[in-house]
Length: 89
Image (cartoon, rainbow, N blue to C red; front, top):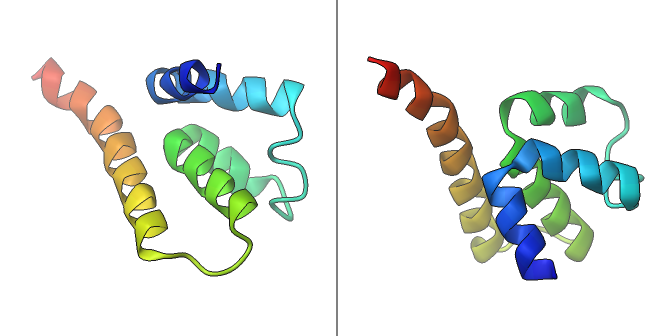
């Protein structure tokens, strides 16, 4: 089941965020306000999921592997955004 959800999160990150917010306490207590999660939902949804997961699992500082995961999430998010514009040309 977790592997299926991971595939869903990569394919449809905004749907995954809504499902996590509605049915789990994944985002509870992570952010002080609503601005950062809202901006993450709109602009970098996969990065929001990855950062929240990493922050939940490791309360200390970020390791090199975790930074690589965040970097890959940002690249995928930016690729999803700019890939549509490039494909329309």
